[in-house]
Length: 549
Ligand code: ATP
Ligand code: MG
Ligand code: MG
Image (spheres, rainbow, N blue to C red):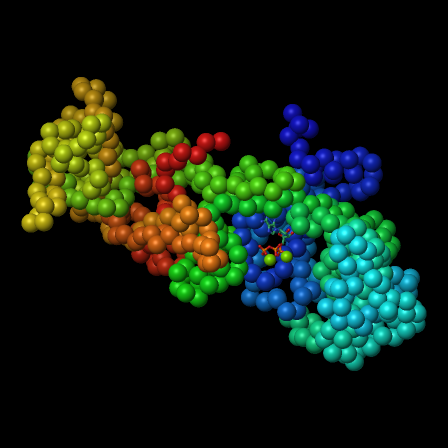
C-alpha cells in the first residue's frame, strides 16, 4: 500500500499539493563547494532528486557559494561528477548562489525600507553579549532605531567599501526577546574585503547563510527546501525572510535527520590529516566514505540508492552500520557480475596423473544465477594454484577441503584426491600433489560419489599475476573512532596488498569494472593505479556477512 510506505516529507508534499499550496514539486541540492561529498550528502541528493522524480517535478543543482572564505573552485567539479554519477540529473538547472548577490542586496535594501533591518556598529562580541541567553531576553543595540534613511546610506557605504571588516553589520530587526535565539536580530550582512571565486572583488559585503538561503530557494521557485535537523530552529527565520521579502509562493523548509555511519571518518579536518600524513592516498582512498572513495572502491550508484532507501527518512538522529552498505553492494552485484577465479594466497597443486603438456579449456558459466552473462573458457592443466588455506596437513574436524587422502571438487573441473605434499626446509608446504578422476568432469552428470568440499583454482601456466588490495576498516572498531586526546584510532591493518594469480581475462579489466572472485568477494579495478592490461583490484566487500535485515 503506497500511502503507508510514504515518508513524512512525502506526506507533507501530498498535503501541499492537495491543498493547492503548490501545484508542483521543485527541490534542490545546495552544497557548499568546500569539500568532497560523502555518503551523508548522497542521502540528501537522492532524497531531493527522488522526490522531484516521484512527483514529476524539478530538481536543481545549486552551489551555495556565498561565503568567500571557505569555498574552492576545485570542489565544484568533483561535486558535479559525484552527483552525475549518482544519477541525479539536474538537466539545465545548474546554479550558483553567488549569481544572486545583486538580488540579495536588493532584498536587504527592501528590508531596510520596510524598517525591518538596521546597520549596527556593535562588535561581534558585543552583539553576542547583547543577544542574552535562553533564560533572559536580549538587550537592544543602541543603533537599533536608526532611521530608514540613515540605514540606507550606511548600508550603501558598507557596500562601497568604506568600512573595514567587522566595523558594521546589517541586522534583521525582529525580536530581541524571542525565545528562539536565531530571531534576536540576526546578522544578515557582513563586511568582508575578500575575493570571491565567482564575483572577484565586486562585493565587499556578503550575506549570511540564514538570509541568503531562503532567497536562493525563492528565486529558483523551490517549493520544498529540504535540509538537515540542525536547521530546525532556523526555520522561523527562513519563514520570516521569505515573508518579509513578499515572495508570492514562498518555499517551505523541511528538516530530516542526517545520515550517520558508525565507525567511519567523515570530518574534513581528519581526512585532511590522513591525506597529509600519507595514511590514505587522497579524498578518494577506498577506505573512506566520500562518494569518490566509494566509487573507487567499487560501489555502484544502485547500491548507494538501495542503502539510502533502506535507511529511510526520519526526524530522529541515528547511525547505521557500515555492514548495511556492504549488504547493499553485495545485493546489487550478485546477479550482475561474472564470477571469476582468482587465488589470493597461492600454493601449487600438481595433478600427477594429468598429462604433462595437456591444456583443456573448460566451458564455464559466468554467473550461475544469471544466464544472460554468458560463458567463458577457462584453462585447466596439470599444475594449478589453489588457496593456501584450502590445504591442511592436519585438519580439524569438519574441514572438508584438501588434506592427505581427501577428495574435493575443483570448481568447474574434476574431483581431485590429495596424495602427498612437499615441504621446504622451514616446514612450509610448497606443493600439494593430487590425482584426478576423469569420470568426474563437471557437466557430465557424474553421480558416482559425492565430495563435501569445492575449491577454486587457476591454471599455473595461464594465470596472470595481479595486485589485489584487501581492506579493513581504517578505524579500529573495537575502540571506536577517536582516542581520548581526540586523535583517530587507526587500524594498522586497514590495507593489505597481495599478488594474486587470476584468470587471464581479468587482466583486461577497465577502471571501475568489477567482478566476483569466487569465495573471496567482489573486486573492482582501481581507477587510479590500474594501467592498461595491468589492473590493480580493490576488494569491495567479502562474500560473507553476519548482517541481517
Ligand atoms: P559537511 O560538514 O559534512 O560537509 P555540510 O552540512 O557542511 O556537511 P553542505 O555542503 O552544507 O555540507 O551540505 C549540502 C547538503 O547536504 C545540505 O542540505 C545538508 O543538509 C546535506 N547533508 C550534509 N551532511 C548530511 C548527512 N550526513 N546526511 C544527510 N544530509 C546531509
Ligand atoms: Mg554546511
Ligand atoms: Mg560541506
